[in-house]
Length: 324
Length: 261
Figure 1 (cartoon, chains in turn orange, purple):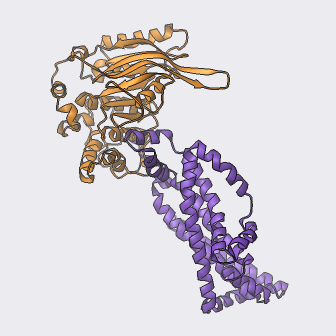
Figure 2: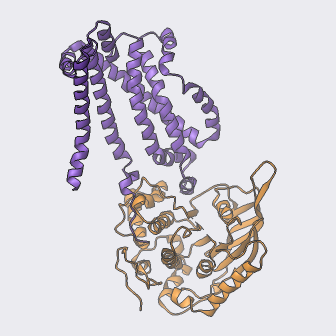
Figure 3: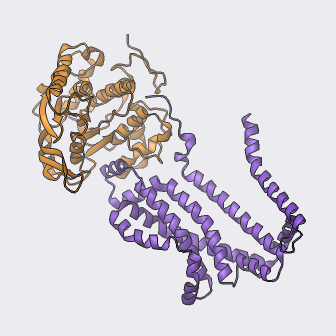
């Protein structure tokens, strides 16, 4: 049933490229890239869980502590002299360590802005965001962004891009290169190390962007509609691969999307937002077993119910409608 | 097919030059005017100029001033342009100043500069500097302004300070645009070089040209025009090679993404 892919990223994407795709296989032979995460007990359990059929609901993970706290954050943009646009209104949210949290909402609900505030790229008009109890004052390597626009350094090769963060942190060239090559292999781009971003397709660029961010071991991944610019097929493959990578060392992920399926498929928790002004409508725990496999999940009535329920909730609201 | 197309492409500029010389030759033979020598006459005068030690020293002096003016202009203009592109305050301060200076022909400032600094190298180099600065500032400014915000954010998340981001992200990202400005600047350097020597007649390639004009040596005048033109072509060709190497990553031949997700 499952189609095997050959080691190098192949051009002919097979139809059945489900969870068992290349990065999933590659993970097994790789050394742990983040000693902090995979050295812990939790990281080990996750690895062993992959091979067995034993499933474990997310809610049963030990006592989770909040790594990010968003406290009554509002963001107001001045659009014209008289009119202000309230992008975010009084948002409070706790994000637990090692959780995969999606922020879901229609365009213009401020979900990206919320992510930028956590990233420290934007300062909120009022309120505060905290990372491990410390107020976020600016960007830092503990929070790694992945943008819809990829934002790769076009003058650097794939390897150069991935090595950039480790080198900046003072890791020796040889070591940084070895780590980066392993990461490039993990995201399925072995053989493309010396290509320039311009030579790559959108999906490949996003794989490089993910590897570049993972390379400096951020504690939190901030993903801003990372698959929004990709075609449906590429998007599915990247979702599967991201899930495989994430289920390995379970970084905290804050994932912005407007796709209900994507949010339910990937997340432990979905934060539904509504727009004008941007508010949190509801936070839904997605109680589905992990590791998740797309072909199993799509047939799972619990998954289907989450998707239908969330879509209905967006339908009922006056402002938004179903996010596309 | 491709090789013959390549041959045509390479032969085309040579053909254009030969065509120009033929038209020139025919026109000057038809007009029979003393001040319009034949192409062959002008070309014959070239070895005389390049063989003469004094002329050669003059031309080299011109090139030295040009290199210094161009180099200094690039060193000052690129950082200034980049800062303007990334900081609204810096741009707001310098923009009006540059807008005033931009339309003024730099040679028109020469008499004043000559009054202050004399007719020597400093004056001429300064005029070249002014001529080159503006396009380089302008293109650096535009290049820096266009740098994707998210690219800078990515750098900031890796721990790059604002200064590091300017040097290690804005500079390379804006490099194609900066080099476009430098290329314009290089041609302007040549033009202002000749103009400055025309006004402050003391030494240089422009001086040879205008001395010959005064003395009615028209084949020398046209020979100098050919020499200056050839210098321009060579400098531009060298610069283009360097540029192509530096921004290989942004060239259109790389603009064909692979079809793999």
